[in-house]
Image (cartoon, rainbow, N blue to C red; front, side, top):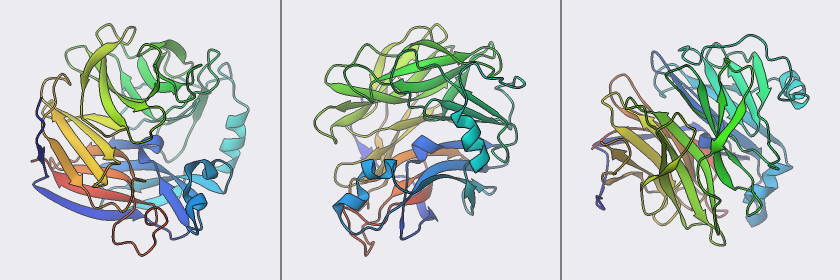
Length: 353
């Protein structure tokens, strides 16, 4: 295990979306999808926020306030962006009436290069044209779990089945336990496949991000967070060697930092990107050269955040080999200071050291 720290060869930061009266956040929750030609689509939350005191920036307050989920699209590798609402109102109303047994429409191919799969909570939404229109809406079965918290992470098995990574509530905690669902019929239905970890004790295990490796192994990063202290959390890797049916602990990526997205680079290495909510606040990464069994030096993408309230990144590898990471942030030089500056969506183009 390498405990050293380094920085990218180069790093260029930019602002994707910032409004002084909104709390923009959680790209990891919304999703990042990459298509041929350096086209990138990200999803994120946008919430009305006055920034007039500590209560205004508490995450729980956004559950009942004015909110929306946004899509942003870049056709030049994250340099410029177009934005719109995630879904039309009519789609949202229709989605509320869905059950796991509703008419699913036509099956899709999960290897279609233009397919966008979004998994938000218990809803799976499919787009055949890179998120320009959404044509299929399905709910995953709760299987007696109170909540399902999907975060748009999935992997395709060699047989064409899609493994969908999610989190369910448990008796111990509402954020609970990572699970995997499966669709073997082109998204017409989703079934519970298995838990990915034992029942957690005194912690959350949540927000898995998975990859299918050429070796036949499937791996997933999982956020591990101790109950009772919101900043004691790290990233673990769990693995399955039988197509997602059974899982076991493989490695730990870092001392601190989660949730973490996994991205396999074109040279076969695995990039892990995660938020860092201890001082100095920012976004970090690590690389594995052996399928997630061990991890190299921690890469500080940036460490100029004003407060802990940032992170939730996702990354893409561009055609020129550089990395683009998108996340939510609050900057140290922001004149606003309500437990941090205005929360906004930022991006970094960077080169691996």
